[in-house]
Length: 156
Image (cartoon, helix red, strand yellow):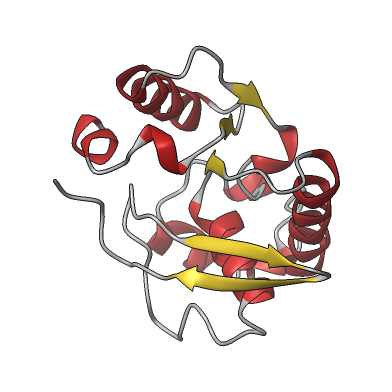
């Protein structure tokens, strides 16, 4: 994460928001510290998708037990994740208008935000977002657009 922080510039961001989950929070603390931000704001909507009973299982394990992520007991369905992602974007636009937000989150949520912001063009089928990759979406009037799309982790 320190390498990721070195690839970022403080002047490009107005605030840092993070998921409250441990790994994202730790990443946000490292990045904010290296960039010189005094505050990190926790945003509950940035949490990872809930996989219910499949939490903690390896991909092969849950895939053999459940044929569909939307059918895992206690899990967050794709439509629920999409609704939460739309609410997140609306919250960003209304709570921090015009601000450049560095948001630290998780794969499923990021993929969904990218899909919403690109009219389902991104990410493409089979593409996997690398940890510490930087993707940028921007808000113009009443819509969102992907302005930077990167699968690979940040590097110096």
